[in-house]
Image (cartoon, rainbow, N blue to C red; front, side, top):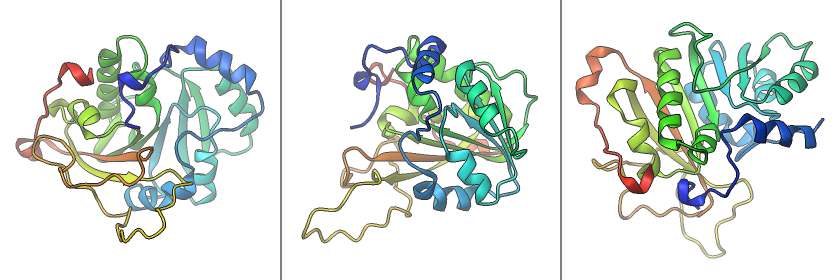
Length: 252
């Protein structure tokens, strides 16, 4: 399943009221969307040095940041639109100084100065906005803020259901100054069918065509897999070579 607007249900995932109500019901629990850190660790460790100042957007009540701190990361700022979950997580981790929590809407992170972070990690937050009202505008605001907050050479790591046809038109806008590397990672419980001769390594980048699509011969082995976009912020001298993929009505 590639998550775009057509995959959304009637919930407004971009609304704080929805998330506050959900976290009241889940009080004391923990839930990691899409993938646990153990699955994402090869990508995180490859692209995000442990010395990085990391911004975790849409942190929720996930264990991702805790697992990263256990793995050596020293400075993780966690934000979420829900004040309910931020209060819960502040209390839970009040004695772990490497993890800080703030209530914030990713569409307006003006509290932080430009170029404040070495890395921004997003595990389903852009997807949530894409399922809310005014999805395209919300996505543009969020991604503009992410680009603003990244230092030159910084990494925005997006873990999403959205395949390149649904995400590249948003991510490739020249204003963001990003070069992009793509990976495809099956869900943790995926097993190749018996007798499969595939030798594909999920740690190898996936090629993207000149039109910002998956190659015609690329096989997505797990239809419920996730795509990982590694977006590196370039400096102005590199911008002339960046492609731009047009938005179409199908992916707005």
